[in-house]
Amino acid sequence: MKFFIDSADIGEIRELSDTGLVDGVTTNPTLVARTGRDFFEVLDEICAVVSGPVSAEVAATDVDNMVTEGRALAARAKNVAVKVPLTWDGLKACRALTQAGIAVNVTLCFSPAQALLAAKAGARFISPFVGRLDDIGHSGMTLIAEIREILDNYPDTLKSEILAASIRNPLHVIEAAKLGAEIATIPPNVMRQLASHALTDKGLGDFLADWNKTGQTIADR
Ligand code: E4P
Image (cartoon, rainbow, N blue to C red):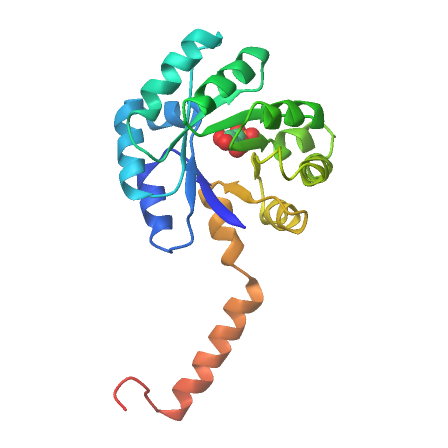
């Protein structure tokens, strides 16, 4: 499974990229607004740090302006994936940008029917928002499973990757991985939670305490 970082904070992205475990980044207008910075400046910096796909979302809602904005975003760096919302105009823009050789991430996907349309429109990535579905009492993971089943039925024609989005906790990442989502886009705090376990901390503390009693060292042998 590929890990993308769901953030527009260059400090966080740099720090997590240093782990070598980051395969891409997703941003959205809310995340960009949170930085208080110029969008293109932020995008350039992220694309310089991460070599994998970096999703940048259009702000227009009509197809012509989405395509114009998408081209402008894609011109910033070769690893930009243009994010368009799952509307009819977004699907048309997806098709046009894809035909122009630009990778498209169709975002705000909440149903298998929407995902099927995005795949048919040639989306490189489809972003089902699992957390937001869970928030309203639906099952985000059921959606991932349904999209997986649909795409697997048509491997020769529907080639989109499932990008599990709106991830709220480590369980979301694990469940999405078990269901075969190619990618999870993970907020920095959840990325850190993935590695932590109370028994790891306790076990390490015990091992080190016992090791120190031996009075030995390893590095200078
Ligand atoms: C995906 O690309 C979005 O940026 C993101 O996952 C939205 O998640 P949220 O529901 O936490 O805002």
